Amino acid sequence: MSGVDPASGSAASESASESLAENIELAEKSDDLMMIDPTGTEHRLLPELSSTTPEERVLVVDFGAQYSQLIARRVREAKVYSEIVPSTLTAAEFAARRPSAIILSGGPKSVHVEGAPAIDPAVYELGIPILGICYGAQLIAQQLGGTVGRGGSGEYGRTTMTRSADAESVLLTEDIPQTQEVWMSHFDAVVEVPEGFRATASTPGAQVAVLENPDRKIFGVQYHPEVVHTPFGQQLLEQFLHQIVGLSSEWTMENFVETSVAAIRAQVGTGRAICGLSGGVDSAVAAALVHKAIGSQLTCVFVDTGLMRKNEGEQVVETFHRHQGLELIHVRSADRFFEKLAGLTDPEEKRKAIGELFIRVFEDARGGITDAQFLVQGTLYPDVIESGTAHAATIKSHHNVGGLPDDLDFDLVEPLRSLFKDEVRAVGSELGLPDEIVWRQPFPGPGLGVRIIGEVTPDKVAVLQEADAIVREELRLAGLEREIWQSFAVLPDIRTVGVMGDERTYGYPVIIRAVTSEDAMTADWARIPYEVLEKMASRIINEVPGVNRVAYDITSKPPGTIEWE
Ligand code: XMP
Image 1 (tube, rainbow, N blue to C red):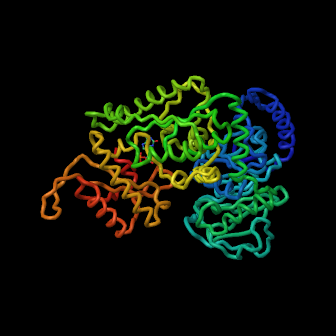
Image 2 (image 1 turned 90 degrees about the vertical axis):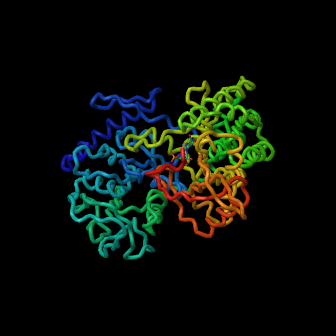
Image 3 (image 1 turned 180 degrees about the vertical axis):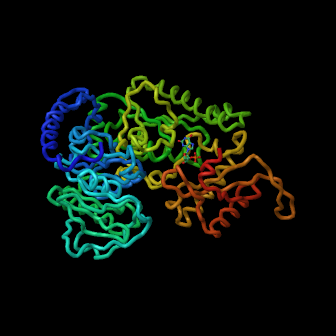
């Protein structure tokens, strides 16, 4: 697929675009979106564009690194809708998605390696503006007849890029300095641009750091404009999207709410929907959005397992029922959970017991609303990408909201499927949800059950709730809440000797766990100031009866996990 022959390019591409046009027409008419290409191979096209997909959209082609998600997010920060697609799409499949522009992401491979991912060369003939980043830039050079040098010294990290004095650039705006810092991560480099292109900037390790063909609106940058270490990176992306492609800034959460509300109404009609609220931000925002669309046709079920954080149950009821006016079934089932957990000490057995009982309780509650055909779920875009694209590694097993299995007999309403987490928070604020919900840290489905080592009892839950509340409160008072991914207390199954006053004590230790992370796949222990840790420790020992010692967990993930069980 890689390496179109530049000499025979134009004649071949004319007939290619003719058959392409026919195929696109065929594809658009076909009900099941199947397409047969000129070689007789069948292709399944991507799911139909939905009514909520904005007219202006950018496709980010995933070449297998983590960069594509970041690029897609940066495009959305420029208020343009973006989606990630696999590099294996044919040109017809690209065209059927009707993108306003295509961005080719970076990737871990060399274009010279056997089997390196490439795009269908006919994509370059579609007349759609293209920006290649790092690997994407090299691919453009290679596929359109330029030369990519192998190896060399490569460049990793910050480097200085200088604009060419003699080549006019449309991508690098006038207000970008002549020399600027950019972030690089490459081994190969473009050494010769394809015909019709010009090199407009260079770095010590890349004589072609930027290549441009303004007539065809095809561009490549060797550096990574999407990372924060490239100060003028976002400016470059915006120049491409707004000035060169001419896209407006319509992807806002206000517009999203408006189009989603219409789409949810169209999907649910006069039907009834239910939603499992877990107290977490995703299910909360999904519920609030669906409620805005269909009002009392939605009933939420909140299974209170007794394993929530301090006051969490009341807060969910307060926020959703009293303030938002949502119809809410609050199932107080702590007794059932404690009964089921009695005597269980193995982490997996505990998780299984909690998960199974949760489903049973949810199903019982659902019995009261027999006519509900729709189930609202807070699935986010990263979950969709992880299960959907060719290259992104599947690292995380998906946790459905509240731990519900996929095979419940419902039609799913998933209004957040196209959103990243930061966008979900913005929608939550837009819908008037309080900060405590919108900025809530992730909380595991089995709740405090996986933070109490050994048998879970009501007494231990009470101790842990108090200690945990202090940890989170002190972190909030120190203004560190939003920098920390998760912060909580853990209660191990051991006792320790201490002395308080003149008395010997024999009590529980509490372990404080606080981590920074981007996505929970990896995490680092948070460097909380000693004074804050000291305050937490002294308050826990003084205020929580039965606790006489506090430790801080300084394990990263890997090798540890975030939760203790
Ligand atoms: P670990 O402990 O595996 O956790 O590093 C990674 C992230 O997942 C959360 N977590 C869960 N979330 N159901 C959930 O919805 C679960 O069973 C579950 N177990 C862990 C954990 O809090 C962290 O954010």
